Image 1 (cartoon, one colour):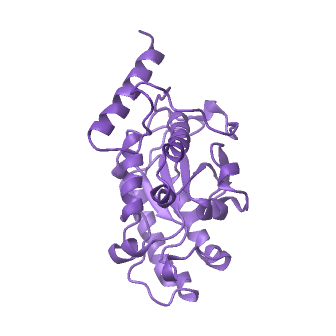
Image 2: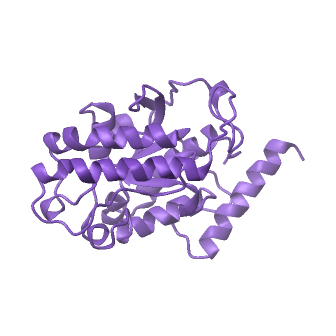
Length: 266
């Protein structure tokens, strides 16, 4: 059996196992071995495949990442302290319970970025812990990862009043801290969850149908280009949990898996 055939078999087996364990994010097809439908738009990549990392300690370009988790976490803690001192949210938020700065592996190869905390996140101080967060956890597990292996954050660090969509002024006030966060973590790829986060990162007004399934990129605070895959927000899937929508998001995540050298062929 070729290595490609073996990788395909293992991925299908993993997808089936996650379904049997109650992880129902992976789209169900007519049989357990059917491949997902192809993305609805043409896939293009702004960064060559040769730059794709193949191991956790290798960064694009082939350099070895010798940073320690302790050092990077300390830098993230210092950034959070600066954010709390600057308090950019005070210009637009009058009542919130907790700052939701972000959590996960400080050396994560993959970051998930949402628009802002919701009520559950505001109460707990943690990103994506409500119903949408539970679905995001399933998406991460379906990729063969765990929540502790990725980094999860939002553009805004505090809940907007009434869970409304962040305004351009709010994004402008908070985006520099997100870009610095990403500059510290140095992920190999990021996933923008939802249209608001995608618009904030790419400075575009295009629709999600036009943006998803195509690699984009944006500069972090230090000018390093971050490969970005836009996809639908888990909250959107909860409102419209169809096989078609799940297949679209799964196709986007499969592209991320391929870019990170996770061996997906299905």
